[in-house]
Length: 138
Image (cartoon, rainbow, N blue to C red; front, side, top):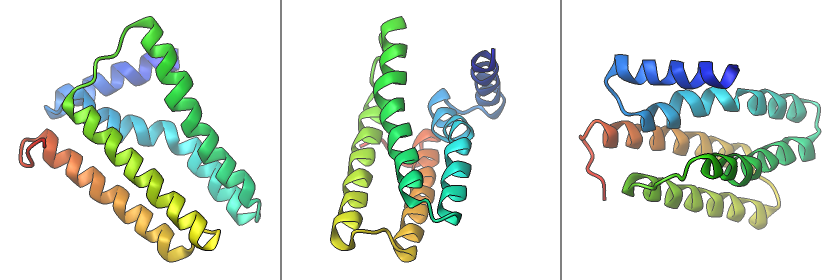
C-alpha cells in the first residue's frame, strides 16, 4: 500500500540522515501528503473559486487532526513528548493568527499570505535546530 511505502521511506530517510522520525514527519511527510491540497487550492484560487480553496484547507486539516489522528490512536495509543506539545502550541498560535487575518478585513491579502509562508519557513528552521540540538526544547 501507499501508506507502507511512505512510512518505510520516511524511516529510511530519517535513518540515512541521522535525524528523528519527528523531523521527517514534520517536513517530508507533511509536505508530501499536503501537495494535493496545495495544488487544489492553487487551481481553485486561479479560477476564483476562493471558497473551494479555503474549504479544502480547513476540511483537510480538520480531517487530519480529528479523523486521521483519531484512527491512528485507536490502533495504537499515541504518546506526546514535550516537542509535540510545543508544536501544538505553534499550531494554535498560527490558527489564531489566520483567524485574526480573516476577521480584520475578511480576507487574507498577498502580504499576509507571504507572512504565512515566511512563518512556515521559520517554523521549519526552528524544528531543524531543535531536532539537531542546536536550539533547546523549552
